[in-house]
Length: 235
Length: 69
Image 1 (tube, each protein chain N blue to C red):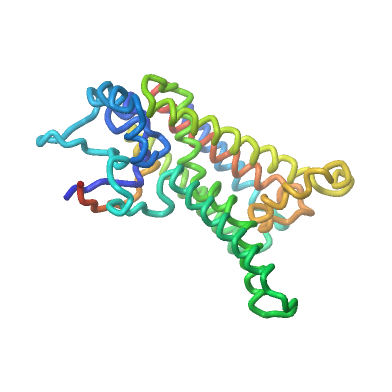
Image 2: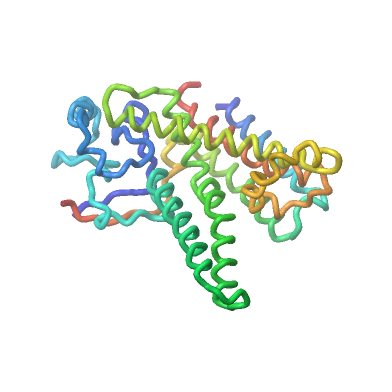
């Protein structure tokens, strides 16, 4: 039996002095890839261990899924997989809906509404729920650039992928703040993509300039706050 | 430390200022939640800077028991 904190960001060992190097909470299947053992050997040196020689934090990628209950939404990679599964499920529901011949079927309507709701909310839920975790993982990754092992390289690959996703959402949020009045015609081409931001923007008034910039400001301010706190030891 | 605290104060203050006008949020509850969150975040961040323990950002009180294979 061992007590582990799953909420603890699994950052770079160099930064936290101990823990594994998988900032993105990579699943334990990664330890089967070639080269993993080499990277672990180097990492073991900087693991902090207790009196019995057990690693204190963040070796949860060694645990099987059934053994570790990932609180909230789990690690970023785990959350992404969950999101992907939910998305596939919503697509399956759509396919099932097509099997209904009766257009006025109540069940069909409910299923379609559920599927649309899922599609709208699933991506943005991932972004919002893991935003601070994601920002800090990216900042740490780029600050230390871990490339001395297969596990670290895969983690860096995830960092690049998530950077693209996060930048995409920032650009969308900027576009959403300009999507008003005459600009609507200019931004017509990105209208379908703005649907992804609906959940983030729907609580703000579009008519007020402050309301329009609130979404992008919240994303930007939170990122800067994480950046400031992460650079704590460098200033 | 002063620089960091200043940045945090400025960011949170701007967010509160943007949230204060009437026609920003559709419901008052959201406005109160955002302002409350910002004030809380500031006090929390100050604690992180004061103690120098970055783990406070990410750590909640959640601890999980797991059997080791």
